[in-house]
Image (cartoon, rainbow, N blue to C red):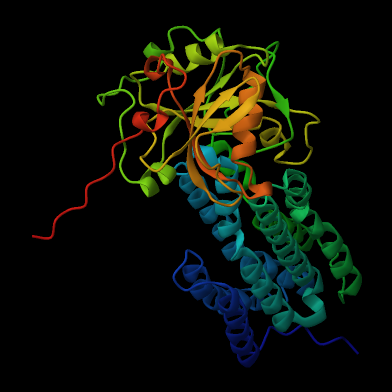
Length: 442
């Protein structure tokens, strides 16, 4: 007796698969985010795609119809991945340069939060529509969902490590990200071993390959796209000696090798504001976004080299100078090239009235009055003295703003040479901005 022809999914099964897939996707997708439209699209695609693939029977094998269904329900996840990648890359352009790496991980984590639920919903829909006849496609989508979830977990852990200054942990956790899509292959093998009947036609193989490609793309966080948007900035600077230290966060700005930077003031757009101006309240001074110039100075450079770099930015829009260093040893992983160029930032605008001052020379820091305690996140200002080197300034700036030791300073300003008092014992508080007057309510 001939075997009965394969039957398409019944209308009731189509309805159950559509509702269940929509519910699974909605559990992990915000209805206010970009994934909302994909959640609404998925049930419709399950019904229409399942019905259409069922209508292809018996002209194609049941394995081909099931594989084609898996490819169709993988489309929302792939389009969502494309959308969040573009969104993350666009958002990276507004990240403050001094927090480039933090912004890279943050926008990538936000962008990948909805991928796993949509992939899981596609796996559920395929399994409900075809059962073991669609095991290969369902397993591919389920493995991709697991990979996307693992990658997002790695990004969350990397971000937490970065927040406490654990750069080695940041690099280690980010290693999970490139391998997110690799789970698709074992998922496909497990699904093929479980599926009955196994796909044997060319059409089924092509459909499964397309499904695997879409799922692997959807499972991979858009880390590289965001990194490109942030301008990885610090170049190799071949042949240039730089300060060395532990791995750390760089800045998203083009790095120059001093003294090979010709006429820096002509390189940047001239500012219309007077040099060393006040920028407002203490809160605004700490958090104000600033254009940054990252410059590599030799570690044994003296105060004259430091002053030349700072003075080169006078009259431009650059209000932050970042000393580029080289990590020793350099970390590995997908963000290793970032962590290999740790930067030490100093602000070039005038400190607020509340700033805590210190003289900084070869012997170290000499605070005027009380020194900021760990965790104070104070506004700090330094008066550089003869004998200080680039390496000493680099180490001090990083130490004062190091999150691992609950940084005492939220930001550190350095007095440009033209404003440096001739008397080394002069009252430094007079260099700060005058106290802000409170507005009268009358």
